[in-house]
Image (cartoon, rainbow, N blue to C red; front, side, top):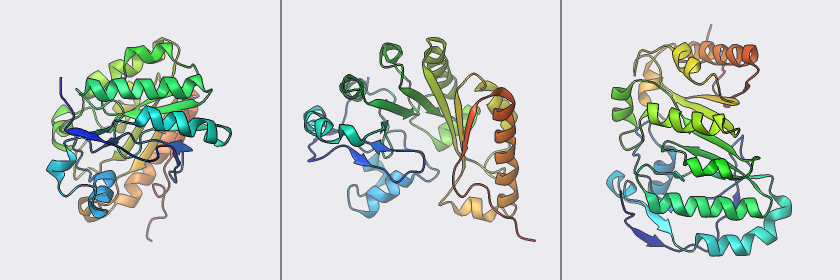
Length: 260
């Protein structure tokens, strides 16, 4: 089991997010050991604003020690405004191998649920089986952009294996909990040749699929037909979900007009 680099304190925790499918969010960890190389927007922003100085520093997470105390103050004040709280947009609530982060995330979710607040979770780690005992309103998700472990080791080096992520998600689904999958940022063929149908087939059990393109990458821009590629894949996801009565959401900027 891994241990966090250290502890920090913050003055606030819950805030309104600008992410298109989000409401409120919380980020109770600074950094992420998964080390995603898409590139990672969270890391780029943290470096830009001086929260970390290097990729290596980003890989060593700091836990916000006063997370639960802040929630005790903010929940009564914000409860009437909150539709849901997402864990997390700039870190991972179930960072692979970090039991201390897992325990804090579970405690935060329980505190929010006890106040009648729904939580939405997204991870590249393993969703704990204990979540089956939490609110039935919660939604539990994983990121899955491939089934190729060699690609995962290159692009998401510190994250859980795709197979293990899927197994944990399926267990929660089978327990009657709401589940979803984020197929984002989906890579273009110059990064990896793969069949999106195979990925969709593996997640056909879930309740919702979000699909989105890769951004901030020179390699994607170098792939000339990337607009047509993402248009075709987005339409495939929409058709797949419609046929199976699965909710779908195509991220802004994924469907675009192609140049004539």
